[in-house]
Image (cartoon, rainbow, N blue to C red):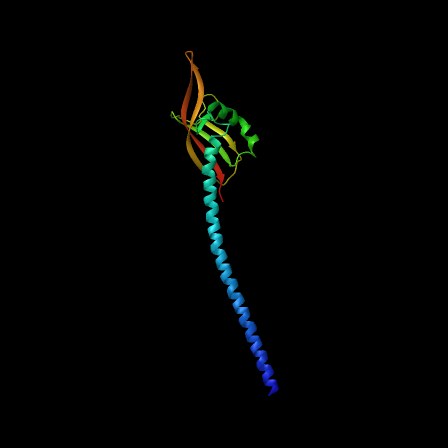
Length: 170
């Protein structure tokens, strides 16, 4: 009779241990499921934050003193500064640029072909490019201005341009 009680007690202990183990494994699976859902949301948030950062960097880059034409006007670029920066000077700013590439195109008046600056009658400025493969581009319209002197008068000549910023996509 005593041996039966011991075996029955051992059986109850084993049952309780298996039950505790099963409950523990159940909560681990629930936790993994919850973490999977959270990480999926994190990936979406990362992509959204990258997009917002790229869009906000468009205005920041256009208003940088290195590129801006007039500090009182937003989104106006100085053509002379663009020509200088597109002559491999942008590579010195590799730590400074918060993006993978900065390019500016003249879009009006319309040109037949793209001529990369610095060149005569150029219409395409590659200010900075770190040659990343996997980039996504965002753009905004800007004014590309310069001072012109004709017939004794000095005036601002502005053309419509497009600022294109590339960011590394994940």
